[in-house]
Amino acid sequence: MATLKFYERVLEMKTIVILSGVPYDSSKQRPQHFASYFARNGYEVLYIFLYDFDKIDPELIINLKSREYLLNLFSRNPDNIYFLKNKVNKETLKTSSLTLLINKIIEVYGGENITFISAFPEWIMHLESIPECSTLIYDCSDEWEEFIKDVDFGYTEKLIYNERKMASIADLVIVSAKKLYLKMSLLNDNIYYLPNGVWNDDYKFKGESHHIPRDLKYIKEPIVFFMGAVAEWVDIELIRFTAESRPQYSFIFVGNQRSKLPQLSNIYFLGSKNYEDLPNYLEKAKVAIIPFKVNNLTAAVTPLKFYEYLSSGTPVVTTIMPDIIDLKGSKTALDKYDFVNYLDYYINMDEISYEREVNHAINTAKSFDWEYLLKPIASLLVGENINFDSKETFINKLIQGYNLYCQNNLIKNELLNAYNRLEKYENSVSLFNTKKINEKIDFEKLALAYIKVNKYEKAIQYLQKYIEISKKSVLLSYVNSLLSENDNKDLIEIYLLKLSGNIYEGLKLTDGLVDKYGMQSKLLGLLAGLYLDIGEYEIAFQFALNTLHNLKDYRIEEVLDVYTISFLTKSLAEKFEFKLAEEIALTLIPISKEWEDKATEMLSEIYVSAHMA
Image (tube, rainbow, N blue to C red; front, side, top):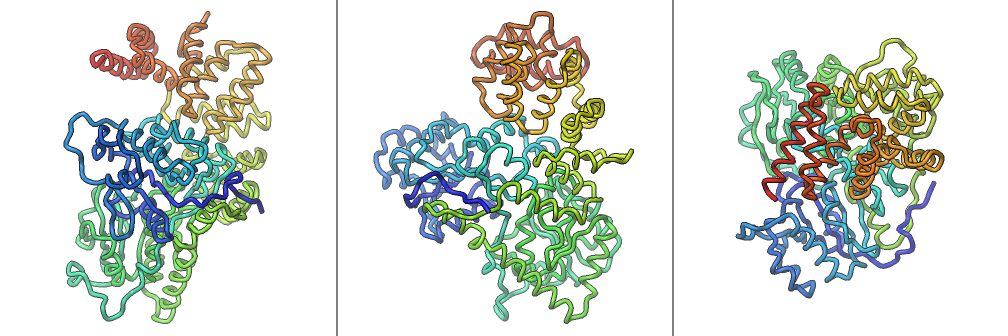
């Protein structure tokens, strides 16, 4: 066991500032539950949404001198949580108002008594002046890299860079999933696994006072229930298959639809419901479902609804998600046939067996009560030490838990990540000693494992496979250029470390090569890309600019990857160096159709910046 503490701080931290990516009055998610916990335990809680800048009048903030006047900007709800009041009627408001507000909070509170809990990477833009005497916690609850690939929320690679910077400078990183633990442990030594939870008191049935919702009264039983967003991560085809296979079951969905549900007579979409009303719907459900797609995005998910289902005493059938495999009161389906069979299993149970499953579900939920989960964090904030598993112990336990499912492709991929994290690269490559390898694995991490065990040709094979599967042919110019060097093994290893998220090991190896060979063009390019990856934008820009001035016999796409080139042209445009930015983009057009498309994007940004200047 290890001990986690925030240096030698012993002051009682009584103010919590939740910096969220979701508004407080939206459907209850992790940040709102955090806010509720700390408010219930005597903390003053300020909840600020990332797009609340339109509720902040900069002219008013500048002259505030005390906590009391500052709090006048906020409303206080019945749960004793402060959130910003209505929008300010001004057209010139900018996101910089959030930075101004954060700085004013630090000023009037003195910094020492404040804990900032950031639940979204973009908040890093407003935290540049956070003092050392304040505490910054990054609550990592999503796999943003997969969001960028699979979900159209308008995010770009910059979100990933900002997250890495946030995680690197935080006093503590909290993660909601084991996959996120593996990822964040590369960036911070203070890391704590805290899965999603439930307020069990909210889901206790109230006997005679419990009423049947009007829109459920005429729907025949048995009821299979889902609550939450029907979004890109939900497997619509699985829902279709299941509903068509069991026309005698009624499938009820409450929440909102980003993805269209199948139009079948036994599927009912009842719209969004208040959090307080959800137990009324769950009481009528025989079984609840989480039909998520099985991919890297959902591998990092511990759905709130899972624990809320269990807390209500409703057994759950779910697709495979590593953090909730076969917890009591639930069944994990490995394919669509399993999914239907497990519905039958619960629905056709005799009364005594079903009641036993209900009790299993309720007892499981007790271990995930928010009061229990968040207590160690509260202890840390008042200067107490908490015992927790070391990284090595935690990851070894993770591996042990996954071994029962090691034939599953998703779990096999998680084992690859875990073995790599422990530098057990022989174990990593042994997972894939068959000729046929599933295309949904992290080929860049498998390539890294092979180069670490000195199987260089295999490493190159899987690096090329990564480029092919991820449809990133614009990387080929750069990778082929690295391969063209006589001593290319170190360069490829650094690049694989970069692709795998192990930025600091990549920087260490690059610095060693610089000491040995000097500031060569491709080393400069690697440094630019590595610093970009951790959100150190000024350092990355200087290295990219130095690379540009040191091209010698190379073309720019041979010494900088596409992301660094895009960053460089955008940065030049922001510094009014429009001509140079344009020249760089124009040189890329003849390379290929893919490069032409990328260069067009860059030129569009350059011309917009020039027009706005």
